[in-house]
Image (tube, rainbow, N blue to C red; front, side, top):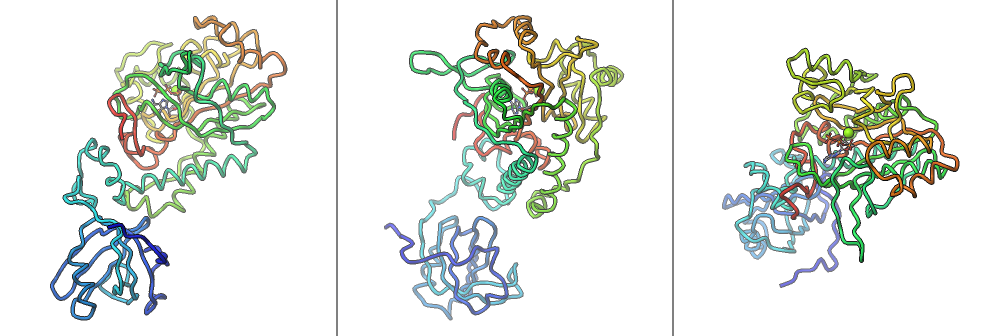
Length: 439
Ligand code: ATP
Ligand code: MG
């Protein structure tokens, strides 16, 4: 039987029910979190998006049909309750509801595929297979409430600083920068790819005169990663700014990270508490470690690395022991950075590229870019790529391209640092990795 809401309207969310409503009739809606039948009294805990409320049914005092209905309740069914608010020193929030009428809007099957009441911690695969139930747990939904707060702060920050939000295509004709594996797709009679980064479009928009832009969007990486920090689909916050150097955009990044920390510590505190995370503001300015210095530190701890190599996982771990919070790694070798990175004028073996790290985790990469057409064309060829396939990109550099810099910040990795999570899969609603394409 289909039960509809009809003329029932929710009057309150659980978080808004308090002493001021005592003796008032209200309507709440949500899931049956728990039921305890003590014979003379039945306690029900109703859960909605922000919290829980106790429903207390004294079996002798309320309608017999209602008691019968409550006795048949199944956990996690969706219900609506009309009832009177009553103060109670035993109820967790000082008030409870005495039910007058109930609608069972949809009954849940039993047994449940996993326990949503936090009492048992299932394996990550069981949790992800049953994500709709896993997300009913408040410590899990808190991760996404913090992420939403982070994205809100990011948008506010960019708006306050005169940046325009843009959207660039994710269906692309060819590899943007080389170096990364792409997912091929069929695009009518042609082959196309899923975008690995908005890099080239961000730069074209500098020539278009937007000067300050940002984008928050999906990026796709086809590497067969099997780590706790890589997914094949992730979200990147990308920014690009004209008339700024690498130092300028590092300052923007540092300010942005700090704004997010301040906002989450002040406004998202209840979610941090649920997660048992003691988030702290960061020391400012962030330490700046040159690549040369990083190599010295790494070698001094017995991990072998040659100048010019990318950092191995073992090397990142050594740095993470030394610097536990946010820090920049700068002056990367030009050789291991993409073609669009500006080499250092005095020593072209070094570049104006930087990474933002948090302990042993890379969370952002950025650089001052090459804005001069001929140098850029040369650098594309040096990387073994065909400049002809970059025609549409290169064209934008020949008719008034300003100097510019920018970065890409991984949303899911950034969220790992805010929530102290070790597995990136935890911070994504429906993660995509080598083995997982559903749900
Ligand atoms: P890594 O060396 O850790 O694989 P990367 O240098 O290949 O990362 P970039 O191309 O610099 O990554 O991308 C910018 C940011 O996007 C990274 O610093 C990271 O935060 C995020 N990112 C990139 N690839 C992934 C991925 N596969 N999964 C999750 N986040 C990613
Ligand atoms: Mg990087």
